[in-house]
Length: 315
Image 1 (cartoon, rainbow, N blue to C red):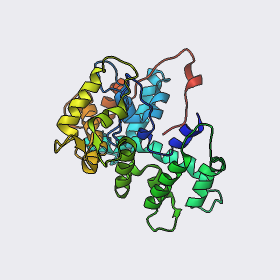
Image 2 (image 1 turned 60 degrees about the horizontal axis):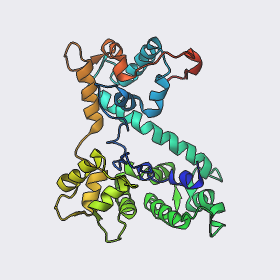
Image 3 (image 1 turned 135 degrees about the vertical axis):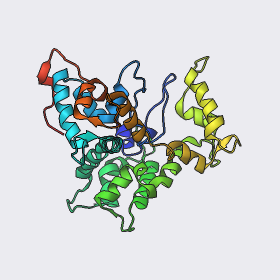
Image 4 (image 1 turned 90 degrees about the vertical axis):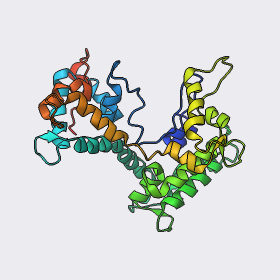
């Protein structure tokens, strides 16, 4: 990973994906984005696996035999069943899915905390973060890669100060989490919108027009014809993104695009999983019903390497 890529990982992950002519870049943030897989059960259950387990844990299950998958799934079910009544409800399944999706955030914060709390006092000051992240780079005023690190540092400082609720330029663990993952905190969402608009609004007029919107997702690179999904995005912009139909998105419309609040994807996925697995149609799932549909929830793959590839730590 190059130095620019490494530093960009500290910013919103959706803002860091490089586009290719035939690939779509999605700026919609974490809660709606349960998986980057296509949700098409007619083809496979990859989306469901990522949603139920989290993407990293889903990869672990790919190496398990069916028997191992069922055994570990049974242990997970016991944790999902919060009231211990022997059944999993939509609400319990929804809460588990949200937990699985947020788990990687906490793990990311823990990793980065260790690298930035230089004096190990349980706090991270802006100076500590700046020195650990940018110190050696800023010693070179003209880096060979031509990347504008000073501009990135200024953006980080602005975001750090917003995350720092008490204004002492020192972040607690919670404030540091808000700095690294602002889309997870209501009081940080304005900075998410601001940074997104700064990235996409190339002419600096304070709005995102259609070509800027498309240009953020797709680069023609000499292609004569646009992919079908680009045409669909043009229609989406006109019909849904640009709500007042003035040909551009203002900050409010941009917020509705990247941080939608009118649809709970975790609950929708929970209802989907229950519908597909509720054999007796009583509106809840027994452990037996879930384990019977293990391929939907977690999947498995017997490999030639067998258990040597399997991580045996429990949830």
